[in-house]
Image (cartoon, rainbow, N blue to C red; front, side, top):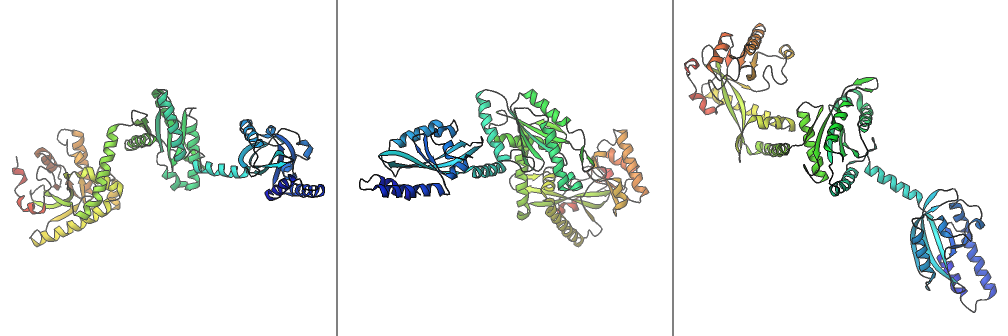
Length: 520
């Protein structure tokens, strides 16, 4: 088309061009103009001179006369009119036919629909005057597809909430505004407690329904200054630029709306939420820091029993950093052979003789020395490292048992710690379900044995129960003579604790001897 127009315009300026040739060229151009699959407009300045059928169809007009003579800017979005006017003025002054420009404009159709149109314009000269020929292309669907893709890339597909990327952009912009206006802003990390149980019980489809209902409840508490985002799974982040007291009230309302059960597929499900709160500037100035610290506070709520909210405290970060250091160290400890077993003797309460030992793991850290099991065992359990650690303990304890047998301790029994009765996951049901032959009483019942009559009654009951089931009894944490005397009176079989011996290295076992009743 450009070639045809160019040929026509150049020939129009030649004095030698005959009238017949001019009519033929004009008819040829008009024919190409009318049947072109492209939408073409010929205008002089802002005035329509001619439009083809394709252009009429695009703007939903039936006849060319409905457009010819009108101002081209009538159909252009008002925000772009001045820009187009300037472009046209510039083009009308040019003397070079090869000049062209490309713009994207928003136009209004005869039915008041709005289209996004790409317009490519070129100057043509006819009879010494400048005209502009513009080829237009409707790119509305391309824009819609692009906008849809952008929306999908920035929103959660299930909940239609802003995803992590968009949420960070929104909050980052608002934090700048909050800082300029010297206002307060808070980040709330929200996690639905025990949500995995919903998926396990009624499937992922039911879980999705419950999730949508949870979002509806959360949204019912929010105001215009709040932005909610789904971080993934059942984890949400809420940004609020309200005052502190209002945010605390918001946290209380969020807890309240989860009191009522969820009804999903005829199932009645009860679920609470845990909320962690971090404050802008006080707890961080970047979106990433506020999110991380709100998460730390939320995890603290989980540890304390869930169904509540808590503000971030610097010690939480210290704990997490320490936990990460320990977890990383544990992964290397097995490879570097940093673990060692200590053995705490078990003493026959009647004879005062060592009848066995309990293997207790210790970690000889290369930088900080021996670490308490209470510090690294929970982390090993959470990270899954407890499995290879347990395998190492069992192998090492068995190997030590063989060595002791060779040294003459053939009757010495070795036990490895799993759980103590009355603590952790132990329960009465296990007494009949598992092949148990010995019951160990947790140290928490021994500490106040001779000062608290209730503790004494509980220990007495445990011993009586064990005896009736023909089980042996071991009491741990015995540190004083009076505790040992009471256990002797209650017919406890064995005791272990600092009263007789601390956990010791294998070579020290031979040195531990003597009647415990002779100890001070």
